[in-house]
Image (cartoon, rainbow, N blue to C red; front, side, top):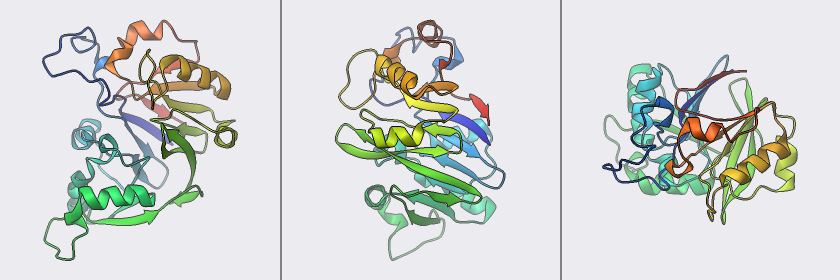
Length: 253
């Protein structure tokens, strides 16, 4: 299985375009963070987790030639806004894209992209097939996906465990039941927004504490605000088995 980090950033705390802070003006490519998403390539399927506003550019930048499905963590705009940009895959590959989402996320998709679901159809609309998910494991091709219930302040959202890879973003509270499902994973990806307290996201220190609790072989932080600081500076504060993810990082499992 191959994991490509399409984006590791967030809309939270993003400055205006003219900002010249040390992160925004950094020449380190690892500080150029698009909205959070990953591409998963298994032996028989290619899918993303989330499709945020940067989805089109992320697909082009990563040279993605095939797409079978999108799995959604939750309904916030920075995770669903790029759905319309599956059109080239529909057209060039002549196939429908499977969408795996909770009923809450499906409701948001129907509101945000009402034309996709309208009774009157016209040429060129995104072609999707909706699949409802909850807390039960489901399969994409030959791969089993285990949903992980976490809380984004008061909003229930999903993380996912795929074999020995666990991906969680936008978490603030994670139950003991979910922790039991994560334990034993070899690679953990968890959100680490900033140093200061935040009502709905793990802070840097909270993410470190959670990583130590899970004790995966390797942990990567994602959903990183520019408020956290420059990549090279932040990494000096991390234990050896915890790193910051960055756009374009590739993992092989």
